[in-house]
Length: 434
Image (cartoon, rainbow, N blue to C red; front, side, top):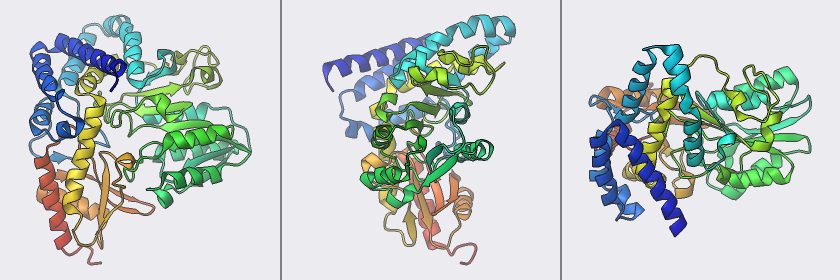
């Protein structure tokens, strides 16, 4: 890390401590001591330091009765985020139209700037909304496309995004060209070539899922985006799973448009997200909901959502600060370490199939495993019934297995229980008898 990067990282950390101190001073002081100790370690050593991550676990209020390994669906919030949310929520209820609309909402621009700093973009390019589906839906439905225009997207994109494009295909007469990314999950050059072959002279848009929720595989988004731009296409990036799981800035993806969920890996309040639109493209993108000036170049035209929880939005700031204090690099290293921890210990189990790449650049926290003869839902049910391990089943295209997605509060002891459960599954006859 050069001096400039170090100073920027330090500013992030110190700013995070300052904000967290205003919520809970004793918590912030204790957290600072633990982070300072970890600063002396390398990323690899820090990723396996169970004392530090054990303290991070204590910052959450997760159940002691079940082991939640479905953080790719939605993650719990640290207690400091919950406390911030509840404080703002109770404050709003004293006089909602005054405290919520006139006082709390006055913090929107400061929050926008904080998120923009995290994402590495201008605050004039970032809209705050409720989830990646809303952000990406706004982009998909707001683009000016005419009959015959073509869009390239992946068969393993998120369902709501695929459905949105199919609706545009039916309504507007555009043509969808599908890429099967499973054909080259471990080969970046081959993946880029698959997208290249799907592009024709009529292609206007290329949509790329940065980290695939079905498999946990990371796609070489920047290489695909650069290739698509060279052919005159605009690029949409679905960063629902990658944002705050991986250490990157939006410019690193090459995106013209991007949507992300903040209630997944950032651990922000439920129902929070962001949408990025490159500055020069804002004026040509129609808002999903009505705006007095729908063709303006102001990113705020996408925030006309009517009444929503301002308390939830403002509490996003606490989640950003908590994330910054841990550190994006350190967090990514820990998440990858947790994935590798359990995968390494089950690699010799008979009859299993791992659908996730183990190359460091091609996966992080998520991994999907299946067993011969077992339905994905049967594995999920068995793990919960016998071990109280909560995962989600994936049955889609060529994948049939359970998705395991730990988070920073997950301990290796939790994963030992998962490993025990998977060994049990490997030794049992499949419930369906097949």
